[in-house]
Image (cartoon, rainbow, N blue to C red; front, side, top):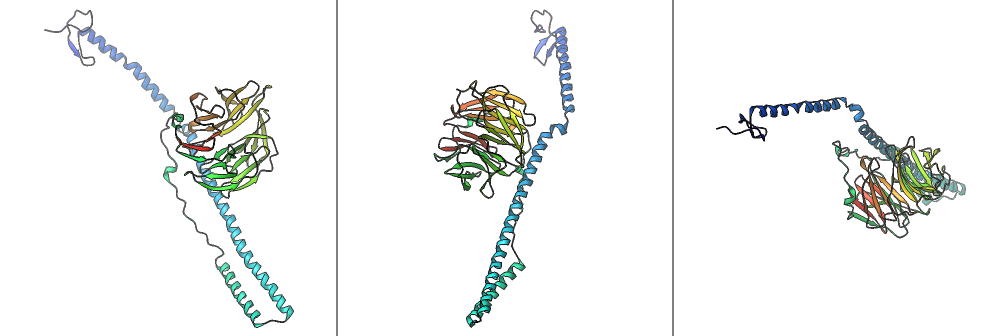
Length: 431
């Protein structure tokens, strides 16, 4: 005997088993069920066609443009690194050869003076003849050695690792603030240390014990130079100079990572400076008199290109931090008039505001510092409250946390090591 149709209130007998829903249905309800399922194919087919249109409309050259820019920038940086090392070694070769020749020239001059004195006195002894003969012999050998091989240059082939460039799917930047509980490494700081750091792809520059120190990827101090120029207000890396820029209140200095030497930039006049930041071809400076201005200097010429104003009204606004990244400038603004701290992202070309974010902190006059992350995201730290803010590329708050100590400065080192300056130490967090 057949079973009744599974549809409620249907009195007809079932005619078939629907394998989709595993129900016994009569002919009419089975046809309705079948038609309903088939009708869903049309909108699904439309969605497939839409996806096909989207994938067909993708312009590979346009989509790969930014990635190619990254590769081109990497290539330019590598070429510049090679050129800089080449010129440095050419200078070392010149100095070595000049020193070697000058040394022998000095010996020849001294010998000629000695010979003139002997000839003038006409009291030459056998010992004098023996001494002069021996000196001539030694000089002849030294000069012959120079003539045959003035210097030896030993080079090591440049080893390129395929892992230097990784290509793959973009991974969403996770919230890194959850990884800041325990540092992977710390470096102690003396009480007289100035609160600023900078980094390039090789070294971290810090001030400690009255010295500028370079720290490598193993957290080892590899080079130092005595610092005798007073309070350091900011540091940044300049690819145009291939040097670190060190900012004081009245002067600007270059720190050469290869020679660990310090030199002053004389072309930029004293300006009551407060903060600094560098892009590929520009140096940006702000002043400590709350005039809402950013001064852009072209590099490497260091001539003033333009003065940019962040605030058109009469509010007193101090620019505490300047961070450049991929054609944008992130500014940490301290508006003294309305007592508010704001983060602004601006276009480097037009200086127009891309987005603005007001920090939810107890107002204070202490400096706010910023650093860039991957995928055009940012970290902002407020010293007074020890809070760190993670902002997205669109200026939205992704996360926030309160650090265990006062945070003076923050920077990303080697793309995966977050470096935080605190009271008495520098903390390194792998992210």
